Length: 103
Figure 1 (cartoon, helix red, strand yellow):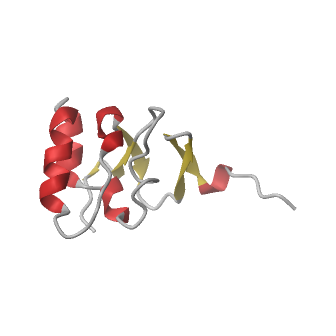
Figure 2 (cartoon, rainbow, N blue to C red):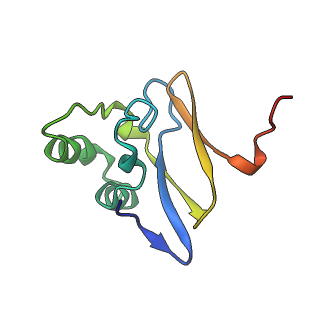
């Protein structure tokens, strides 16, 4: 899986806007949270071009790109375990070490 790594941190894509998740609506494509091409578009403020890019990448399979307009990048230290949580389409990143386990 290709990733963008800078200064020991990995770019992780998530969609905090309500309505549609990025990864959580496309769990069969875990690589979407690291996609270097999408990271570049988000950094350039070109979220409106992401849907066209995704359509060209996933020609053999379905990918819902509705959450692309709200995509953000979280820079997470390499090796940090995390989970992308979704509520009503709004995604957030939870660090595994911070999640309290129920007894």
